Image 1 (spheres, helix red, strand yellow):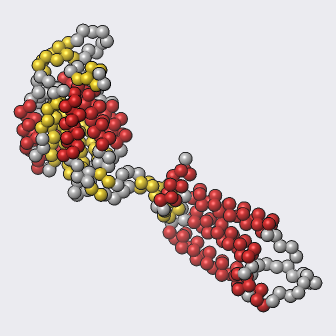
Image 2: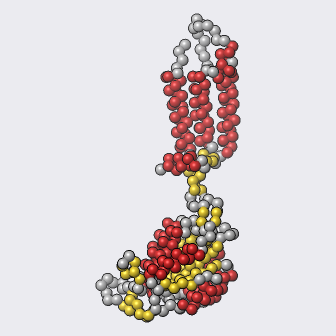
Image 3: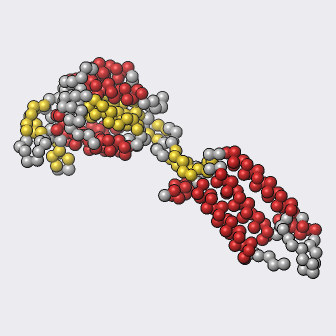
Amino acid sequence: MWPGAEWEALRTGALGVENVVWLWIGAFALVALAAMALLSGPGCVRVPEAGPPRSRTQDSVLGRLLDGPWLLSLSLRLGALGLLLLTLARPVGLLPENPATGRGIDLVIALDASGSMKALDATLASRRVTRLELAQQVVADFIREREGDRIGLVVFGEHAFTQCPLTVDHRLLLNALERIEVGIAGDATALGEAIGLGVRRLRVAGGTPDARRVLLLLTDGRHNSGRLGPETAAEIAQLEHVRIHAVGVGTSGRVPFAQDHPGAPLRFEEVDLDRKTLETIASISQGRFFHAEQPEDLAQIVSAIDEIEASPRTSEPRYRRASLAPLTLFAALLLLLLEATTAHGVLRRLP
């Protein structure tokens, strides 16, 4: 409801107008009308034999200022007129839309969704889950801790694509993260394309000049697809001043895989992690390599990365505008009603 936004703007004092010209016109009009009213005085019907004649003091400006009922009526009318003119100036309240503080980091998360992420060698809340489900949960917790930072999401398998561009709207990002499924980008693993796309997202996104740019790469396999090699992609990242933290997920050897049909027997396959390539990628870009063999390791690694990339900053807050016109119009009508009640009721003058 609009009243909540408007009262919040009034409470914080973040106010403004969209048409300053009407504001100045209203100010001059109010001053002129007030001066004319004080000089001319209240309209009176002269009745003979109604009493002694009015003194010069009563007809003077000073006397009118001492005329409480008339002055109250004039003030209420001028106040209502002022609020109507303010409504024409389109008053607005400025409400913070996004946090004004953050760590000064533009971060892209590149998440492996290849076929091997279907391996059932992870547990979550005492329940056996796939590697992808575990990674999604840990990454979601990581995103919630990065308040104020711009974060994007790249998904890769045989190919890489942008699941969510850099944004400070973390609710949008979390919804995009939940929609990722195993095999959505193919069953192979194109590490080079994932790094290349992540670097491109960071390069074209703009941002503040002092913002640090980081790529978080989570994968459980080895590069076996795509034209761009991972080492070459890492060198490009280094030239673009993008630091890569590479996280290897899962164990090597025979592991069970989730089946598409409930009740089907588990399928075991050989999987391996190209640790050497991931270490090289991190080293070239001046990042770090982590290996999460157990489910709890992944949460600890993501927490460690969160600490490594902590760099407080202050940035200009972004605001959204809430119109105050309904509130000023309502206040003007309220003053007119109050003036009518006092002038023709409580403070009514009888000849």
